[in-house]
Length: 330
Image (tube, rainbow, N blue to C red; front, top):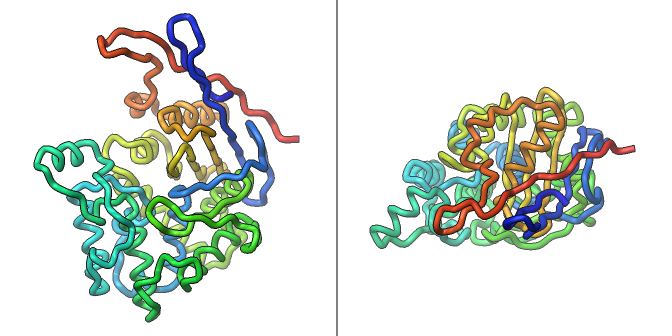
């Protein structure tokens, strides 16, 4: 058990899950749950997917700046600034939003979503939180004269480049990586949670890679840190967690997955809430960081850390209690 909620004097809900803390060599230092649990990190691997685009040379060729790179690594909120940036990214290669195959959904940013609903506006693919990642895939394919209509196919050259990177980061052989489709239509990769913790450690401990790749990963880290509002949007978990810590690289994945890369400690952390509920993620993340001795400015996370449960009369009817201790792996 990771978290329980109460209703009155009774336990109401129980959230179970798995947590791995690993170095880049794959040594598990601390854990909770099952190291071999199969998980799909989903959007938590966007920095690795962005690296695939960087390594083609396309982002440099088209003059992608760090703010745009951070957006490519993020699950953005669909704000006006962010959707305009996605169009700018596409425009640098002569592409348009009509070539995005990510589908549409209302903005994740609450203010933008309310405003669109108030005006009766329909979302476009630009509002999809994954649209910048898709734009980077299109840029890479355009730069290398690859087919743009099939850029999401499992066997498309760019998806095969991403698959190779997943092997390089996780040490799972390509043929053993679980393949499925993500919410935005891209291939999504599955494997034991311990391997994903290793992968995130390799975002901050790059000694295993070539000097060229090390420089590109360093650029990704710098872009994210310098533009935290592009990784998500104001008031959302990833953005707030960057602002509340010193140099930590966080990334949420759909359905209760969270990743952390700790540069000073050279560690990667993978967290999965089994039920997929995301409302308990930040309390779990902060509890993990507290146990590792990582400083967190909790005042900057106050909107994510409320322990009281209210009813519609605004009366306190229960509590959210984070209740686990990481174990040393022996």
